Structure formats: structure tokens, C-alpha cells
Image 1 (cartoon, rainbow, N blue to C red):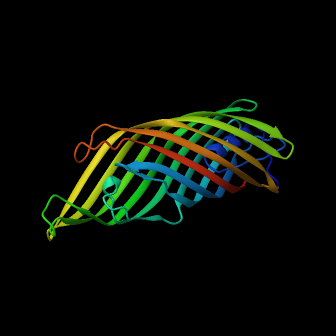
Image 2: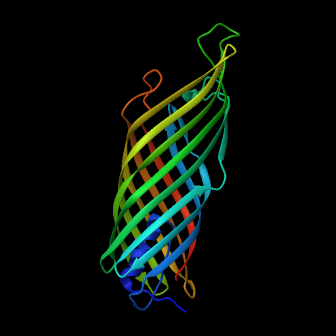
Image 3: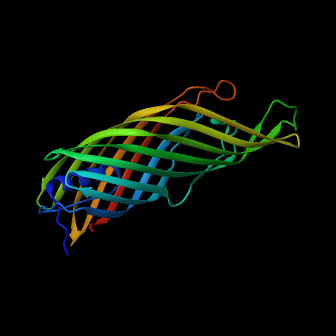
Length: 277
């Protein structure tokens, strides 16, 4: 049976494309409850800073979601995770950020809950709650401390988690064409942030565990553009680009009054497929 959606539901699900890679396309109206699972392949870059060290990892991710829609409303759940860790080797002697001669592995995961409403033809508003985490492992970090050679060589293994989570609000506009739609969106997020670091440090044959947490707030905008259209009966596709720009301001410092405030920038390219039930 072919599923056909009214224009309001179509707009709402098209709006969701701009938050997560979900898509929709329809041509006739009914008022039934619609369930839309989706899967998408995403290429994502995330830029952030730890101390004085800037990281710009890139990932291939799998994005999974489930949306339900009725008349002018929808709700959605979404989960996105990197398929493989991003790895890099830092061999800069006495380099910035205290990560000299180390192996760094970074992974990323995100989830979100979203609700939306069609205000008028072509215009929708949405809001929800999101969570994003950069997970960083710093392995065999070699550096020199204040001791006397050769006893001033230290090695540490660190686990750093950079977490941003909180509510967001936004709106979208949809341009409808014969074979699909072009959707634009803008959203604002205000989130709590945490920088959590746990390190095992070995120096002079002694090992100690160092832990610290920096709290703060993060805010910023996200915007995206997506093209979506029909594939086959009850199947649709979407492809597009989205950018998130957030600023994390730390409430406290670590180490020797080190400020870990940073800008976090996401650039996301995706292609996805959805099916209506």
C-alpha cells in the first residue's frame, strides 16, 4: 500500500531532515498516524580545542532514527555514532597542549529528541533536547616535568570527555518542487557543558591518578540545507549539508589556571533513506 501524507506532515518531516538525515515526500492528503524509520550515512568533521591543542577529527557515522507524525505534529528520536575512531600521531617535541609524542584516538556520538509543528504552508517550528560527546584517548604521552634528568621524563595516558547537552529551538522553510523539496533551517541551542579528564601519570617509577572536571555553558546556531525526493513506493531519499557552531565558556579552570573554553564547529554531509508505514 502506498502511503500518502498531507502537506503539513510532509513539511514537518522535511524539517526533520535538517535536524537529522530523515526525508519525506508525498502528494495526497490523509490524516493517519505515520511512522518513519530511517537510516543515513554521514561524513562529519568536528573542530574543538583541549588546552592549546586544536583537534579537527573527521568521521564516517551511521545515523538511525524513528519519527511518528499526525496531522500537523511530529516527534522523533535519533542516534548517531562514529563507525571508526579518528586517530592521529602527535610528534611535536614540546608541542602545544601538553600532548607531545602521543597517539590520540577520538570518537563521537550524538542523540536527540525532537518535536515539531507546522505553522502554515511551507513554515514549521521545532524544538527538543540534544546530547553530543567527543571521547578522546591520549595514549603514551611523553613529556618532561620539573625533575632532574634522566628522572624528569613522565608518561601519561588520558581519557578526556567533552560533553554538550541541552535544549534547542528552530524553524524551517520548505520550497516544494515537482520531484522533491528544498528545505532550509535555522536553530539555536543553549546547553550545559562538561570537560572531564582522567589521567594516569607515571614519573620517577611512581604512578598517580589525576582527575578534574570543568563545567560551563555552551550556545550557538545550526543551519542546514537539504534536498529530498521520492525513490519508490513509500521510500524517499535525502542529501544535504548542516553546520553547527557552538561556544563553550568554562566556569572554572584546570591545572595552572588553564582555561578550557573553546569553539566547537561541526560540518555534516549526509545521504539517507526513509520508509513510511
